[in-house]
Figure 1 (cartoon, rainbow, N blue to C red):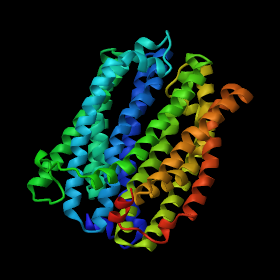
Figure 2 (cartoon, helix red, strand yellow):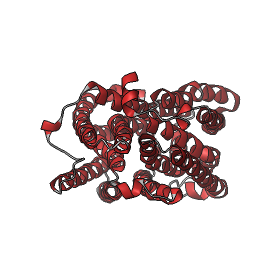
Figure 3 (cartoon, rainbow, N blue to C red):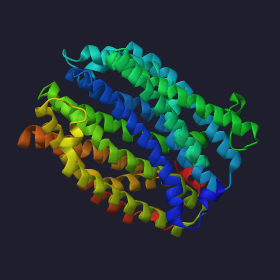
Length: 455
């Protein structure tokens, strides 16, 4: 743990923290693409559309994990920088049991209100039965979705980088195997895809719990599973939640914007939704890698901040941003050159292939901007600057995005709707650079206990 956080070479430290997180996100992406690939083998656009429509709901469930996973990650990393191990253990224990409780609530609520949820997501008579099939098993697996995704962030903050990545890879591998069994061999369609997803998260949750039990038995003073250690207090809860809620809202508002987008695309029929669904899955490659890099580096930034190492923190942010922009530029070039070929992997109808290929090239325009937006968002989260990270999220998914979709739809119909994302993220990247340049956190770090007092 200490070796990672106190690595002298900043680039090497970024790679040690960022690459495993990127690998973990990549395995998550692979299972997402596998879901779509196996469902696409049914050659039924309504099924592909149903998976696309349910994706925002899946993301909203995962966002609950962000409250305690990302919030706990930020608090724990800064506490480690301040050498407050007892507080780290208490915070980790609180996050664990809070996620268990939240998962049970989501399970019960989702099953009771599945029909209105499906309709809000944009399901119509053509695909609503498939949507129901998917949502049912996703809600049943909600506790494991939340625990697994929360543990990823918490493990990174503790320096358990390898374990965090293995858990992600394990869950996603299980998911892909069951995708093949349930969809291809048994023909269960969207229900099989959702059940495979829930089983994958179940397996990764068991792995993470086993790691925690093993660490506790070996005498690790940062880890405790005992319910007797569950002793939240106001400062702890405020510290976690004040960062976690903006972190969760990133996913929630992304889901809301996707629901708005899906409803606008739905105007042009299920085929348009299916084409966009494929393009979005492909575009998730640079998105997830960028998220992985920024989230992987976030504990490093939080540690430097808590330890008062301002220069190293600034260097880590700038270097990570450069890496992210360069990575995005590579994907932009690939999408422009090979968008149609990538679409043909999932689709069989020529008109849909060309439409999805065009969508891929348009969405790819935002890839370089992700390196700036995601890194600066993670910077504010790592420092505990909840309001600023929330502001970026609201601008990205509400203030800028929804009006852009409405205006561009009127101007250029379906093509304009798809172009809303790169247009918004170009503007937002500029805003993020200005926010970072003017942020006092890069000049004078504030101790964690004083931050908690001020909230």
